[in-house]
Image 1 (tube, helix red, strand yellow):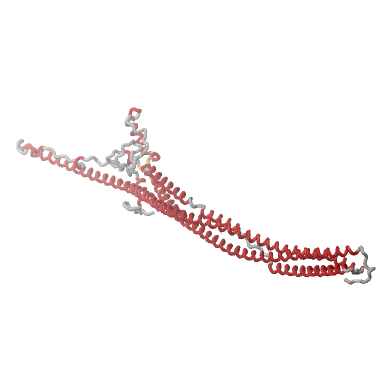
Image 2 (cartoon, rainbow, N blue to C red; image 1 turned 120 degrees about the vertical axis):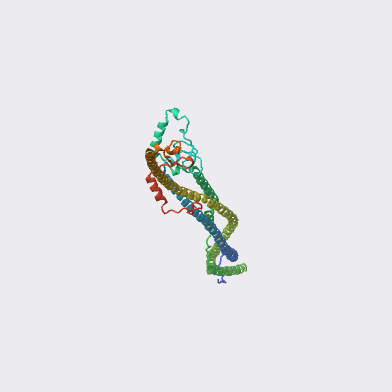
Length: 499
């Protein structure tokens, strides 16, 4: 800015303009100082925010590791509960398999009993000769089973007034013979089995089995519930915060601050020049038109400089906002982790209760399962009982057939003996008659009074006149069937049979 000593170079109207330019320079400097101060404050705040972000990020990382560790522990607990339940379920399945085997074996025996007919003579003859003992029943149904188990239903035909109902003894005998010939009306070995007791036993076992399911159901949802909770917590775990590049931010802020400092220095220099020009003007010095144009050009540049300073502040503020956003996000992650840790603490208490409850259920289930195993023993005993029953019945058929053979053989011997005795008596009678004819007329009557007696006739009977043993009639096909059923079978009649 040059000065001219010519008094005519300036005019009085220019004097207020110099004052305006000086005031404008002062305002620009003050505004620039304010912007630089604000920029410095923002830079300092950015630095502090960056420190806070790094500290929060470290806490987030630490808490993330803690959350993941606790989630792994929770997953192990859930797996442990699932494994314990799987082991219990495996033992229950083994019991189910064993029960099915015992039940199927018993059903097979009962079905076999149902396929073997019993001749009516076995249960409709007199009590003295019935193979099944005293029946005290009608000709169609007895009152007791071979094992002494009473039948629950009575037959209306068991009435002492049968003959009054137009059923003569001859008609009843005819009906009896008709039933004897019609095997479809015969009883089977299964008719003498107390199936009501078997059904009660099976119902009791099934009821106890259902009780075991109820016990296991108390913790059935534990593994799935824990898995869902763990998955839900995992979904709550926030991902890593995308932190801005601190080096780039600080480098940018440093460059912006340097430029702003240069601009502020330029404003200060311009203000000093305008202050000096103002003093010179007050001392009576006049400025040339060229000087005034330079002052005006410098004044016009102030606006651009201030705009650049404002842009610098906005840039530094934008960096600060990025750091603040990172801090906010990191703080939100930290708060989320704290809530997750609180949830995990609650989950830990829940898992403790679950483990205690699972242990209680496991103990109760094992005790109940042991009880169920004991209940399978009656099934095995029934299988052995009815297997032995069928085997004994077939042996009974063979024994009765053998006794009939023995009786028939004895009767043949007796008949043959009686025939021989009769022949001997007849021969003896003829010999005595010849003797009497030849010598009797010469023997006085008072000598040997019994010489004219006929020979004794003989008979052969049972001891003490016991009645002939009555045996039921057994057809040959039934005997052959009994032989086939007992052929090659060994049954321990007095010991339990293992399935």
